[in-house]
Every structure is written in C-alpha cells, then in structure tokens.
Image (cartoon, rainbow, N blue to C red; front, side, top):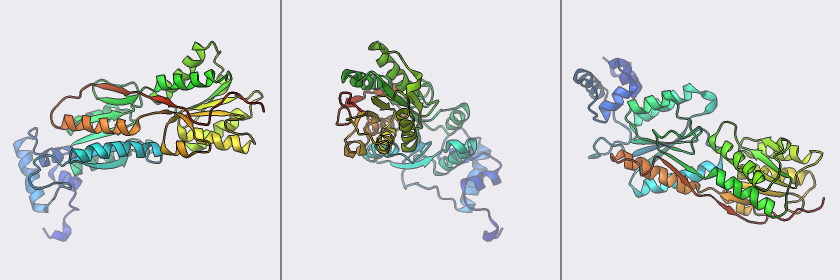
Length: 344
C-alpha cells in the first residue's frame, strides 16, 4: 500500500481498519489486559505499520499519559477560570498536565461522542467533569475506557458511584438572605440560576428557608429566572425594578448576575446600596473591584478544583477517594453593596 493512500493516522482510523471500537484501541495503547490476544495483535500491527505515536506518551512513562481531562459544559464564565486554576495547580504539583475542553449542551450526544473520541486518542488517565449530569451513556463509556472520573458541582442529584466535589450552596444562600433581613430588608428579590442544576435548586431553597425562618412569606413575584450570566441578571433586575412594589434588595445566584443587576439599577436611575442592596454568589475576583464592591457568598472554586484533581489522581494510582461526596464550606463576604433600606 502506498503511504499516500493510507487513512489519516488517528486512533479512529486504526479502529476502523482493525474492525474494533476506539476504546479497544485505547486499551491496547494503555497496555490493559481486557483485550483478546488476536485483537491486540491485529491492533498492534496496524499501530506499527502506520507509525502511530500516542500524544502525551513519554519514554519510560509506562501505561500512563500524565494527562487529566477537565471538561466543562461552557467555558465562557470567569467561574470556569477559577476551577481551571485550582485543577492546574494540583496537577502541576503531581507532575501531571491538564487538557481543558467543553461538551456543549446544545450539541447533545454529538459533542459527547466527539469528546470521548478525543479523550481515547490522547489516552488521558482520568477526567474531571464540571456541572455535568453523568448520564448512563457517558458513565458506560468512561467505564469501558477504565477512566477514573470526578464530578465537580454535579448537575443532578449526586451519585455515590462517582466521587463529587461541591459547595454548601443551601447554607450559603440562607446566610445571604439572613444578612439582608438583618439589615432591615423585608421585600427581597431573588434571581435564580440555570434551571435544572442542583446548585440552582439548592440556592433557591436556601433563600426560601431564610425567609421562612424570619417569618417572611415567600412571594413568587419576587423570583425571576436567570441563567448565571450577566445578561440574564440585567434582564431580571429590570423586571424586578419595574414591579408595582419593587424589592429593596436583590439576592442573585451568581456574581455575574449580580453585576447585571447593578447595571439595571443604574439604568433605572437608582443607586447601590442607597436604593437597592445587592448580594451575589461565588466571590469572583471582579466582585471586589465592582463599584461598589459586591457583598457575596464565597464559593471556594479554586479549592474545589484542587480537591477534584487530587481525588482523580489518587484514583489513577488505584486508591479510593477519601469520601464519595464532599461539600466545601461557603461563607458570606460583606462589602459595600448592602445597607439598611433607603428611601426612593
């Protein structure tokens, strides 16, 4: 066969010519034993013939690639940057590298399959999946690849079969609501996070619990749906301020949405906190540089990333996680965006 007529030297091309799946080729590359001898021989022959060189392979590195895959649904948020920072710090300490990618929700199964193909090709040692609902298909494929996985901030109800790292979302939301009540607010608006996410539900429940503990009736008119981004916070802020009886304070489920509320307050001719107090959630770096600096619930994002990386690296070494479910503590950071109710 002439070299110019050969398929591209990719793991997919090797799998197609061998008549096996991509995960099977990955297992051969990793030296794993769950491949039939004749299949292994056929795949190894093709790998030699095509001169396939596994990306990330290092002389003397054995079956491990030294790569950890860090997977997001979206990469357009400063929130993601903080997670990446923590993961990379812990990975570097262990001599590992990080590959960052995204499985886009809108692309559905197509994007998931593409990522699985890519992760097989680079033979990553483990995966950290962020705000992911680990469905049966993805779980089965990770098991076929024999790839340890950790989920950070799980999208759905935490599954004890896969280690998860989260934060005390409910407790943080209760604290933020109690802070506003303690400064004298009784009519408190709430901007909810992306529908269907576990953290969104927990923060809404915490807001309601805070109101209930103070004897304040829950008013659904004061809850506006957001999507954890600036634009949805701006729209929600405008809607709340246009109510016949607008709130004197707004608790947004993320800092980005809180900053969107800031802009709505400004465009409506009001001021923070003189007219409207605002609280966020996350404590992203820009929250402390906002004008005025934002009162917010600190979510230890970088620490969550570090712990996720250390957990998956333990699993790569054949050790179990220290705990199947970890929630790191949140805490309220009071700055200048909250005060006693003013007069409009």
